Image (cartoon, rainbow, N blue to C red; front, side):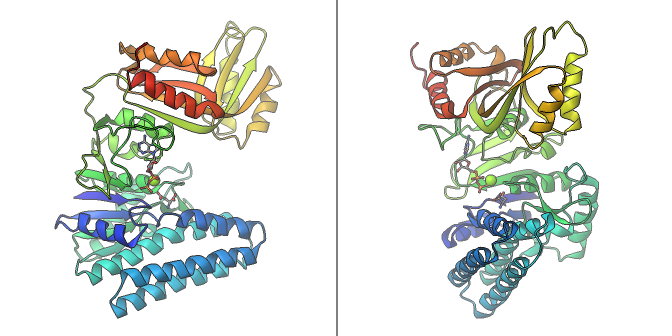
Length: 440
Ligand code: ADP
Ligand code: ASP
Ligand code: MG
C-alpha cells in the first residue's frame, strides 16, 4: 500500500485533476490525500478575516464568488447529469454553511470550520469524478480518524485505532480518498495541521498504516537545491536523507510542511516528491540513505525575530542561560538559532506572539535588543560542516551583513541570520559560490 498526496495546483484545474486520475489509476492499493484547490484556502482565510472584523457583506461577496467558481469546476468536470447534481448539492451545502458562519460570533472553531471546507470540496468532487470515469474509490472522512493532542501533535494511538475501524467498516477498495490538512483537536473540535498541512497528513497516515512509500505530488520536479521562487537556475536533487529533508522543510523549503518527515523517519518509510505535471521526471527520493556529503540545498525561513540578551558577566555566571531558557519555556516559544559570547547571547524565534512578555521578563536581569524582519538562511547537506567545499560559503561575508552564524550545531546544517531585505541576494550569491562553482 502507498499514500499519494496531491497538492493545491495538482487539483487546481480540470486538466490537472484529470492528470491525477491517470496517475492513481494503476490498479495498486493506495490512500489518496488531497489538498484544497489552489487559492481556495487563502480565500477561506479571507472570509474568516471578514467575519472576525465584523464585515459580513464583504464575507458574503467572497463566498458568492467562490460558490460560482466551484459550480464552474463541477460543470467542467462532471458531464454525468446525476453526478453533476450530486456534486452541486454538496457544494451548495458547503456554501450554505459558510453563509451561516457570517451570522455567527467569530471564534477559533468558526475559523477552523471555514478553513476545512476546501479539502472537503476537492475530495468530494474528485470522488464523483472517479465514479464518472468508472474508477472505483471510497471516500474516507479525515475527521473520522485524524486528531491532534493537547500539544498539537498527531494523536497516533487514536489515529491508528480509528483508521483501522474506518477501513474495516468501509468497502474493501483499491483507492481511498481522504482530506489532507483537516483534523479534530483534543476536545473534538474541528482543527487543522497548519498551512501546507496536507503533506503532514500524508506522512501521518503513511506511518500509521506502515505503507511502503509516501508520495507527495506537487507542481515541481522535487526538492530543488535553492528556492526557485527567488533564485534562477535551481536544480532538482535526486536523493535526500530524512535528516536533510527535515532540516530543509523546517527551515523554509515550502515544498514540504515543516513536520512532514517526522512521522515516517523512525519506520524508515521513503517519501518521494513528484511532479503531477511531469510524472516522468525522477523527482526526489527521501530515505535513510546518506551516501553523498556536502551542501545539497539552501533554504530560507522568514519572519524571524532576533533577541540579543546582554549582561555584565554572563558565561562565568553559571545558571544564566538556564534562566534565559526558562522564560522561553514558560511562554512556549521555541528557539531556532543561538550564539553566545562572554557578555551576550543572541537567539532567534519565529513565533513572536509572546515577545513583549518575554522581553519584559528578560529585562529584569539583562539589557535587550530586538531585531525583527530577519531571515534564517540554512545550508543543508550530510556532513556539510566537514566538507572541503563548505568554506566557499564564507565568500558571502563580502556581499551582505550577517547578523548571526550557527556552525557545528549539527553536522548537516549551517545557518546564517540576515536582514530579510538581503535574503534574495544571500540566496543568489550562495547559489553562485556553492553550486555554480564561481572561480574565487
Ligand atoms: P502544493 O500545493 O503541491 O503543496 P506548495 O506550493 O506547497 O505545493 O509547494 C511547492 C512549491 O514550493 C513550488 O512550486 C516552489 O515554488 C516552492 N519551493 C520553495 N522552495 C523549494 C525547493 N527548495 N524546491 C522545490 N520547490 C520549492
Ligand atoms: N489547503 C491547505 C493550505 O493551503 C493545506 C495544504 O495545501 O497542504 O494550507
Ligand atoms: Mg504544500
